[in-house]
Image (cartoon, rainbow, N blue to C red; front, side, top):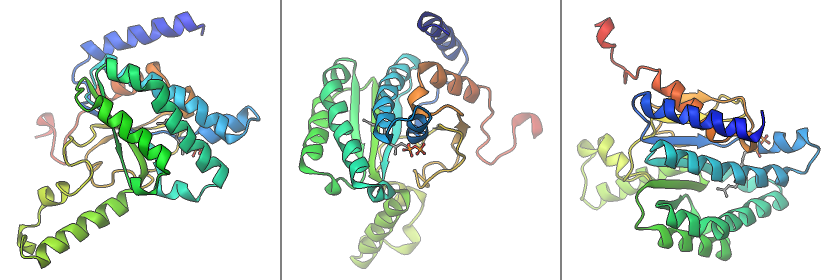
Length: 257
Ligand code: FPP
């Protein structure tokens, strides 16, 4: 397809999304396949990540156009620190580059950026970039872009459990008072709704330690496309698929009752 027919297809799909019912309030994405995208082109892996940065831009614009309120991207996991040093450095440099390039436009378009994860592991320059984009966009509300960096759900849950244990030991909480709300209030996502839709690219069918608690009732959409080729059109297709589903949250549907 030519670029203009892609644009026409995206516009058409956006119309369908807008008229197709409930737009998911929170879309979470496991961006996967950068390495394979690069390998197919006989390029080093960081080229895949660089192209992946363009896909991030596309998807942010698509989410804004569709009226999604929260977009959560899994950009770097706790486990990713174990990749070769050169790849980790390339990814961190890309994060800084993304922020430097996009901060003005994100701020102008009403996007609030939050970066969630174990940020004390970031280099000072990356941390400074994170603080800059968070403070420049803190008052925005059209879309909240949550970038999960140096994040792993099990570690997030362990931190929440430790916090509860400390509160019990200090007499501020009783074991009987621990419920889902108490856990949720101690997670990094405490002030956002759970994801309605999780998208994973590149055909892999795993959660990979992303938002384990928060994804309990989330609809999952697997796209065969490698992340660098994922754009607005693919995002809108995922939302259309979601709109055709019936969410039951463990109950029976009204028709089946
Ligand atoms: C998974 O692909 C992707 C990542 C580990 C990194 C995601 C990073 C980006 C999209 C670029 C920068 C992002 C921001 C927010 C600036 P993989 O390397 O595991 O691919 P493979 O499974 O094909 O090897």
